[in-house]
Image 1: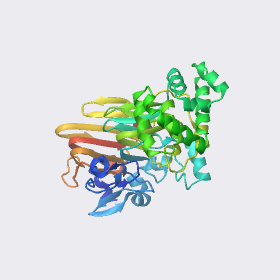
Image 2: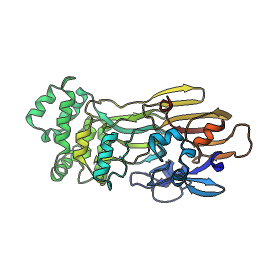
Image 3: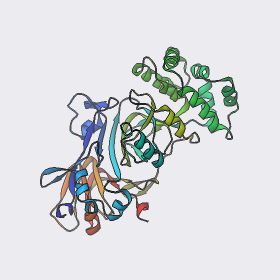
Image 4: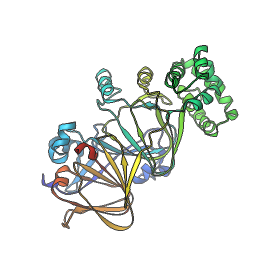
Length: 408
């Protein structure tokens, strides 16, 4: 147990998905020290997910965090966290570098996640839900939630290929869309489009690509140019640009992904934190497994704007407030060396995005861990419960803990 009563260096893992940025342009590659390598670098994970667990450095040797938790659950996680989530670190921290659109997707709630995992563990490896926050590290664009009623009507009727896929009854109801029937109309339209056959999608996308320059909306026009190169034979997700909001996040702004809200990152670098889960229900803009029927049944058609995250700013700290009990994300910034005294509950991870930082037990010189951009420190629950910590920095760090609302 003694080794966990001090801050420990934590090594993350890199995921090389095809939508990631190339080494020289990728924030993930830069932070991982691999920006001189070829290939794409999409995600950097810090956590204990079974797919790709981080490693602690103990006595200069790497130790799998997931295995360490399994052997010392109450020491590393704390008794209450173990009672709530078992031998699982409840949160997963990521950095994303997005060069091209990700899949149109939704996240399941806890009940559906358990059902999907039981029925199809190969495609749904986790039985957990996936509340998630995404904070823009650079300018970020994404699809998120359905457009407002009148904007939805205007964009859909302005796309002759979508109109061709709709029945006369659906078109009549779309013409009269209002707050009273908005969700029902959007569901009819979305189901009709997502239910098109592969042959229909290829034909309609071919027509749409030829008419891209005639599209009035500059953002839709720009993204159609991108996806036409990626999916020359079409993809049903292409039509989502007319039905979903195209959202721009400036650095520091954040969005919270609610269960059932369709979304997809399009470009940019993102700091993410989520429950410890890798489940995704996809239905477009992907060559991966699609589960369209499940997605359509769980989509929330009432959400017509992104769930932007409120922040609480105090001194150097920006706290991102979400209802997810599993995680709580705080950005801490300083342009001068400055110690930050803190006492957090449960396990915690501090990730240095830029600059440098250190952590030590307050009043004790031994056990000090120093990190630079791209490195992280892990704090066990036993450490946080026994001794106050000193956290110093000159730059930007993200601190991930269990949400304070869990302890209330």
